[in-house]
Length: 270
Image 1 (spheres, rainbow, N blue to C red):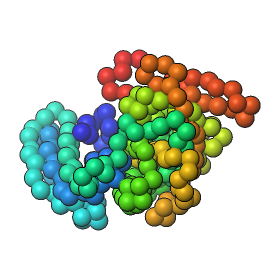
Image 2: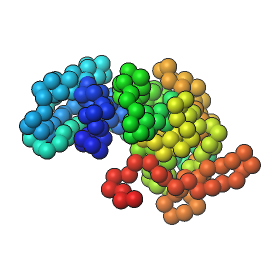
Image 3: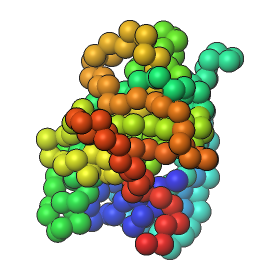
């Protein structure tokens, strides 16, 4: 679900970008399970005074990505509302028993991430500061690329024990894996692939990178690039030290420090 003034602002994001991002969010979830997209369904709530040009551009951005990813728009609904709400459902397929989940990470596994982190959050930070940014200046924020080819390759090679896409921030999404798998995740901060426009805090806690975060056995031969996308080892899975499983950081001297998840969390009040 993409909600105006929550996930985008009309004064910041071109309508084509919003349409692209709407579908990319759903496709990224399919990628994180090692799946292949089949179809999408879109429901739109629109203000009655919204210019038709905006709607046309939104659909242009969404349908361009749908054609590229062979994910036909197969239905949906429209309604009037005070603000724009775009609700996307993406259907995908994966062979029975091969779905990549968040719950299979095991102690001893290594933690990997695709691409670079923090770039999208850095753009959003600049927008919040009042700077005007053209959508062509930062494609990872305005036109993110779902890592479908990477997810598919990893699933077919049977290398992954758990996987999730980084939509809410590395610290939050790794915490989801730790909680579901009942393990601890330990990050080497110096190993994080921080985007040139970002800093360590944004790489850890910034969201909407839509990169893939996954674990694989220590013995797995995980390449440094898959489908043209860089792959970086950033930590390891360890036995849990708390009831739910936690995320920690480790320095060069081997000292561990708890890392509080601080990315995007729905209904957070602080």
